[in-house]
Amino acid sequence: MTSLAIVGNAVILGLLTYPSNEARMGGLLEALDTLFIGFFIVELVIRVTAFGRHPGRFFKDGWNVFDFLVVTAAFVPGIRENVTLLRLARLARVLRLVRIFPTLRIIVVAVGRSLPGALGLFAVAAVVLYLYGMVGWLMFADRYPEQFGTIGQAALTLFLLLTLEGLGDLVHDGLLVSPWSLAYYVSFVLFGAFVLVNILIGVVLNSMEEARRMEAEEDEKAMPSDPVVDRLDALHATIVSMRVPDDARSCPEPCCAASRAAAPRRTEHHDVQHHTGIDQSVR
Image 1: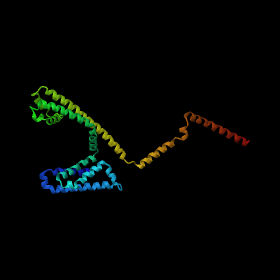
Image 2: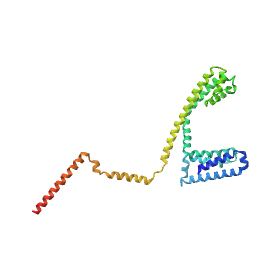
Image 3: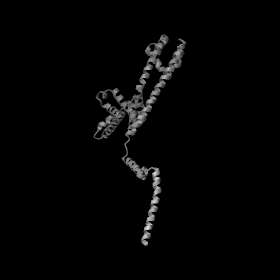
Image 4: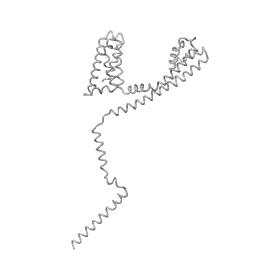
């Protein structure tokens, strides 16, 4: 239900971006948006009151704090009067889908966990862009000032080149300046577009696997145990332990075999004594 309300709110926000819809149905769309806000507030109150006498536990979860801030942001005095900030606060409600869908939550957690490991990679990429940008500025600044007129323009051109967009045009224009431009672009594409980008993808995938494992562990810890099932398991263990006598478990196999062999002899001896006593009494 909450996910449908979030999607419906996102549709309303999208319709408000069209001037024609705002002119014709502005009042209706604003009323629907207010209705969604009321729904989100009621849902938030229910979730907080579900903790009973300990409502503070609601804020121990980071996703709950995020929901609380997103829902209540529209009532902050500085935001409600500002149209731009109010629209941004409305747009932030769509991000609540991340909490509802586990797949999206895993992706967001993975991206966040990959940032520390990717800082070194970003530093290397910045150094590579600077070095190649300076070389490109020296080679092409006079001929192509729009792409390599400054170090900033050169770095931006090379950054866009990581997607291999416009590579053919740049190589063609570079060959008109110097044949060494081919080695310049080829070396940058091999190291930047293939090596650095693939390393970044590997870091993100590793973080995603770790986030998926952590999500599974949290779900397992959060799953409540059924007392009936626990009692049945204890009863089953007790029955299994009672099936085998204690002396049979503690007695070695040779001794047990000897005991079983001696049992019939004791029985025969007892029978002989019994018959002998009967004969003597008859006499």
